[in-house]
Every structure is written in C-alpha cells, then in structure tokens.
Amino acid sequence: MKAKKPSRVRAAILTLLGVGENDHLWAEASSATGVAVTNERILQLSAAWACTRLISETIATLPLSLYEKTSAGKQVASQHPLHFILHDQPNSDTVSSVFLESLVASMLLRGNARSEKLMVGDRIVGLDFLHPDRLSKVTDYQGHTKWRYREANNKTRDIPADRIWHVPGFSLDGKNGVSVIHHGAEVFGAAIAAERAANSTWKNGLHPTTAWSYPEKLQPDQRKDARAAIKKLSGSVNAGDPVIIEAGMDVKVIGINPNDAQLLESRAFGVEEVCRWFRVPPFMVGHSEKSTSWGTGIEQQMIGFLTFTLGPWIRRIEQYINKDLLSPGDRSRYYAKFAVEGLLRSDSAARAAFYSAMVNNGIFTRDEIRELEDRPPMGGNAAVLTVQTALAPLDSLGKTTDSNAARAALQNWLNSSQED
Image (tube, rainbow, N blue to C red):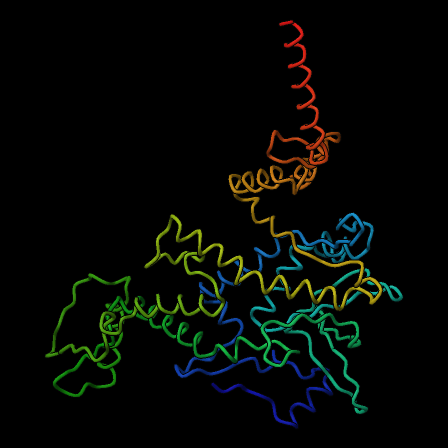
C-alpha cells in the first residue's frame, strides 16, 4: 500500500494558494490488485455504502439530549442552549439527524469528523459540519495553527483552532482517527477489483477473453473489417446470435472462465470482508448467505450489533460533547446522552415488553412511559411508581398490609360476637 503525499515544494505552493495539509488532496492509496482506492470508490461498493448508511443513519435516529444532575436524579436540561442544538437543530441550515449522519459518516470513512463551533461571545449557539474535502490545516510562519475552509462558492476563510470541534474515529495515537483509505486499501481494493472483473465478464457475454486466428496474415482493411464483425458478435446483448466461421478462422480461449476464477465466491467474500471492516453483521446489509434469516441466531447478532458496533461510536460522541462543548463549570452538572431506547420504536412488541417490565418493577412511572411515547402526562397515580404486587404504590405497601391485617382482625371479632 502506497499513499501519495505532496513534495515540500508542492506543499508550500498549496499553502500559498490557500490549500493546506489535508488528506483529501492525496487521499488515494494503491493495493496489491493495482486498483487505486479513494473515498469515492469505496462508496461505490454496495457493501461499504450499506454499512456506512446503516451505522450513521441508525445513530442519527437516536434522540440525543442534554441531561442535568439533580438531587432527585437526572432530568432533561431543556433550558440549556446546548440541548436545542444537540436534540433539534445545530444550525439554521440543517437538523440534528442530518448533522449526526454527516458526523458519523466522516468518522467511519475519513477517520475524523470536524465541525465549527458557532459562538456569540463565550457561548456556543450552533454547530456547522465541515466537509473534510474542503477543510485543510495550515501553519503560518510563526508556527500558529489554524484551519482553512473552502465554501461551496470556492471562497476560503480561516477558522481558529479553538473553534473546531473534533471527534476522532478509531485512533492509534489517542488524538487522530486512522484513515480507512490507507489502512483498508487491500480489503477495499480487492473488493473493487472483484466488482470490475464481474462487470467485465457480463459485458463480454459471460465469456473469458478469446483469440481469433487466421491461417494467413490479414491486410489492414481486412483486419479492420474482422474486428468490426467480431465486435458485433461480442457482449451479453448479442449472446446467442449465430456466428459464421470463414476464411479458415479459428477461435481459442486465452482467459480464465468465471467458474475457474471463482468470481461469484470472490464477490461474496468481498462483501464479508467489507462488513468485517465496519463490524456489521452481513445479514444487516442483505447478505444472508450461510446465515439463517430468522430465529435466535439473528436476534443474538442484533444484540451484538447494538453492543459492539453502535456502542463505541455513541460513547465517543457523548464524551467529546462533554469535553469540548460544555464549559468546565457545566461538566459537573450536565452531560449528553443518547436514548438507545429509541431503537425499540420500530418493534412494538419489544417496546411494550420493555415498558411493562419497567413499570411492573417500579423503575418507570406511567407518565414517564407516556412521555417516551410523546403523549401528555395523566398525573395522579400515573406519576407514582408501582410494583407488580397488585400494582400498589411503593410507599403504601406496608400501610396496605397493616390495613388488611386490621380488617381481618375486625372481621374475626365480629364473627365471634355474633356466635356469642
């Protein structure tokens, strides 16, 4: 694997032109297959596209809120300005779900996600995602670092380093995420090569390369006519048309047929390799080969996906919000957290079972469940914790037992009085 990096002279010229040290200018790596791997070519793989969308869109559907620690427990800090930014709208041009999709996709594919902190004084009033292809890091002659961003209209502007919110992906140095293009070039290069070979085979009518030989040397005009005739007979569109062999022409196969090259097996293996890179179960991107499509196996794989795939990304985003978007004074009082329960919205049976267990064990009140379902609170006993034992309020369990004992004693006394 060989990554292309600019020379010192070119780097200096790029800096003068307003383009700094950024991977997107040379974000290309070669693999053993000879295929150049770029960010765009990775996304042309259906498995890579599906894995990226699956992870980023799933995380974007989870409600992200800012919570406040109180003496009565945690509660949503809806009054805090950062809550609206995270939960609803990070800036005037987009919403939180689209912002999170871009953030996670950049972490998955580029290794890092960067956004600009929109400030009014010392207060954050918004977040603006910065496209990695238009963002570059520059250093002036005094050694000061800043970021240069090229807008959609090709105008550039400088952003101070302290205005950049950086969330790294999987990291080896504790500061920056690793590049998928460089570290996964062999995996993605092999998958791209298999796709190209398959497409070429279909284009050639499912036949390998063939040689058309003549007993005598052809004249230039004859060679041109022969090539034109052969071209009309080639390709999957013309497969099945009759072929006329004349002038002593002979046809020989000089390539490897798809069965010998195990083309289909290579493509299937490429899907599994890409899924392994993103840590996504293959069945979740439509690859159900060698896997059951129902039953306990899939359920266990889903639990693994939630725990081992989404969990690290969610935790990383939460911690970097607390670290970089909250002031030192607010960090001890507020914290950001995804509501993973949002994944249950697509499964009414699982959601009902979860709510029932929470209410019957005195963990959630009915009003809290109604709030999760975006319904108005009922108040009264609906705001009281209950347990499964006759669904009685927790603080009245002892009273209820004493009352029943007194009622039983009174009934026994009345029965004995009537007998006397």
